[in-house]
Image (cartoon, rainbow, N blue to C red):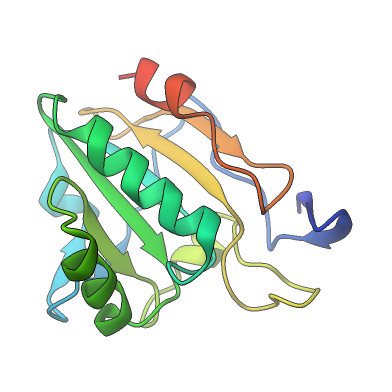
Length: 164
């Protein structure tokens, strides 16, 4: 269990992020069109998991926009923006913002939050995801992790993308 803060108040996650060098837990998430996005579909690629509470909050929206801008120049890389938002909300946001270089993925029918240790287990946002980034290499192993210590802050984009 990790401890992060929300507005300076401690909140806890359901576990810990996978360790660098370990095999990334498999996942099966829902895309904006309700199709499946499974880790097995992305085998052989770098996968950046931009994990956050909700696309309808300012910091989360900024992280999606920033990864969208920076993902345009990445070879053999998929950026998945993962939240507990319904796929319809994710699709609405991306359509309105012109987001085309990242994919959204919803955890609403999965165990992703528990498998990656990012489900918040207390506090105002209990039940949704903490802010984190996990980079998975083409071999399926974890290359980088960051559990953002204050949920209202952005992740370290340079560290995440520099690990690719």
